[in-house]
View 1: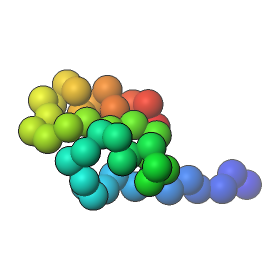
View 2: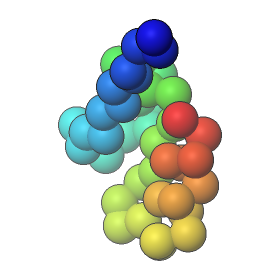
View 3: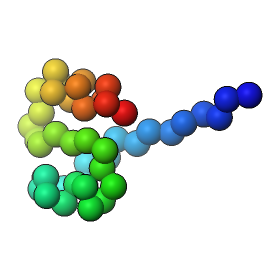
Length: 44
């Protein structure tokens, strides 16, 4: 039986330099274009 994986999409900060320190795998800056957001989600 395969374990389910959970992915979270959270808006915490608008500062890209903070994202890696918060454990982010990827991020976009607001406001994000739909295609940019889709690329970030596909990386998960």
